[in-house]
Image 1 (cartoon, rainbow, N blue to C red):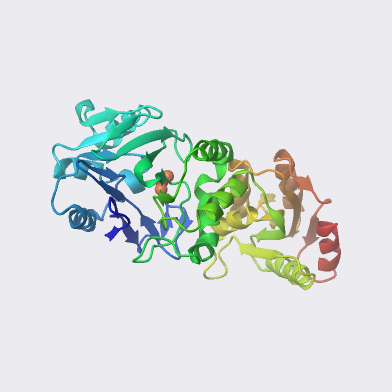
Image 2: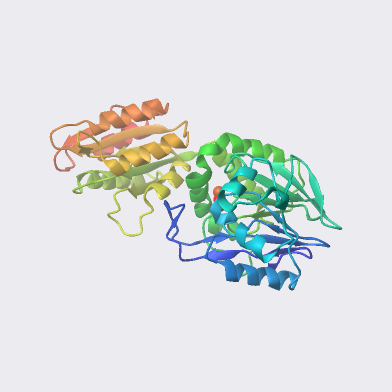
Length: 393
Ligand code: FEO
């Protein structure tokens, strides 16, 4: 538990144990599930936390409000990392009312069998008084689910933003950011955005426009630090990511069965680095320990303007881990990227053509035919310098 202001307490938890967020995304630095108390004549709890943290969560709440009951539970977002303990809260506080919007209702019933008389349904801009201060509710659909809303506390210029402006990584004992916090979390924030919210660039832009009318002094997200000193940087990063804006650089993503496509990827990375081009390399087949796989590759696709994909031909098609990556690109509506394909084959050079076809369907700029090389890698078969010329022209 941490006191953030005279009225606001952080009562969320850190999760160091979960290996894959949403069962998909690696968590080398853990994740936090943030929840907040607004303490006034009435007590409001903003969101809950993931299942398994019941005792710690209740202890944090009690530490903040000294055994008083929670009057309202605001449900900004129903994904279970924030909503899992709704039933538990309803049992702990028999008079508690849930504050939620109309789109949340069927989810509350489906996940927690919540009865209508336990819910106060709010609409866009509606306010609920807690005594001296009040909360108002603003819909930001698809950031990250259709029911998502943010809660605004005008007396503190604070927005409880749900997943927006969140990041992977546990939080320090002091959850409020310092000047250097943004730089410490930047990569994990981009990875979180690209993995979780990356498909929803247009809704994120709409949400940013809506929030730009508010004099925000504090952002309390559901994941990661509370932002006070870095608000401009955090909002600017979300703006850039949701416009799919990138910088010059190359993201090499490959899968390899017997090391030949991998050797080509490494040779190209060495050549690009020698030329001073920012370059990230991701092995999707998990041959290197510590690899983030598709998760890390997506992060760097949101950073750099050029995607180079390597795949051997497998069953006369694309190597399955690479196919998964291409599907992840398509699902995120990535646009405006430059694309080059390469890979080894034994008897059928089809993976490169199929990669180029998928990239064309995403309207990427295809940088030449790509290069399929037969059997083992050699510098003669895969001329990294000529390929770098082609990619950088
Ligand atoms: Fe952190 Fe969409 O849940």
